[in-house]
Amino acid sequence: MAPGRRCSSFADVNDVQLDGTRIIPVVALPDADLALDLGQALSAGGIRTIEVTLRTPAAIAAIARLAEHSDLLVGAGTVLTAEQVELAVEAGAKYILSPGFSATVVRRCQEVGVPVIPGIATATELQAALEAGITTVKFFPA
Image 1 (tube, helix red, strand yellow):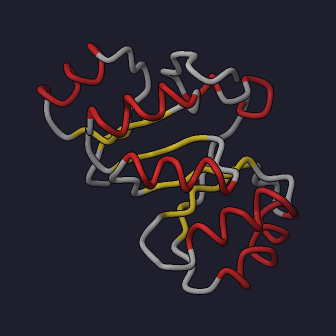
Image 2 (image 1 turned 45 degrees about the vertical axis):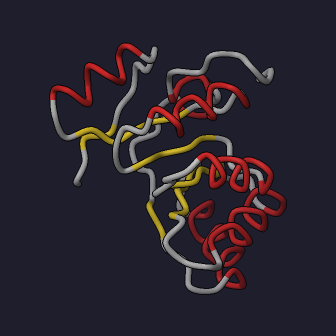
């Protein structure tokens, strides 16, 4: 996906790879060394995508390991800042999720060409997402 392309939908990641996706595991890894075994287990179980939350210091390293050494489509979750978008994308994240609608996070994702799924809990947040061109949101808190 070209940088600067306005990405608004999770399907923008890879229509074929997401076709039929029913489960997206959301994980918080305390140690990046756990990432590869987890990735292999998920792949063996037929899971094709994973969301690694940025709730632990090991998250960025875990994203990098999964992106480099597994066949999973790796995303970063609990992304709160534009800097975290940069770190996650540099590590290999192919999509970004945030727990709430942040215009700053959405704008940075659109600038670097990575799909973003903001969390929303109110009609106001939904309207802001739609105005930003977002077509896929996550109802949050889950």
